[in-house]
Amino acid sequence: MPHIVVKMLQGRTEEQKERLAAALRDTLMKEIGAGSAHVSVSIEDYTAQKWQEIFKEEITDKPDTLRIAPQYDPESLL
Image 1 (cartoon, rainbow, N blue to C red):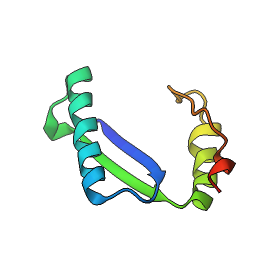
Image 2 (image 1 turned 135 degrees about the vertical axis):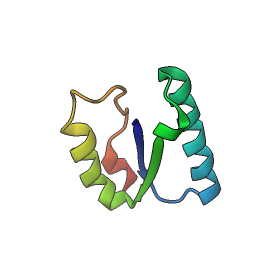
Image 3 (image 1 turned 30 degrees about the vertical axis):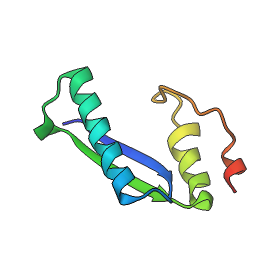
Image 4 (image 1 turned 180 degrees about the vertical axis):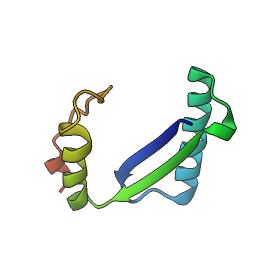
């Protein structure tokens, strides 16, 4: 039942999102041995302004679940 959520700034094409979702699904299946019927992927687009709030909720406030920390200040996106 793995579910991958990608949260990113808006601006990518639908084709880019489809390729990303497929690549993430395939990598997850390979790395943890999950079957394709059990994997789902969603992509959420945000404005730079809304990303400030999401960054705090998903990254700053959840250090125990973060596996790779970003190396940028989210305010630099404004």
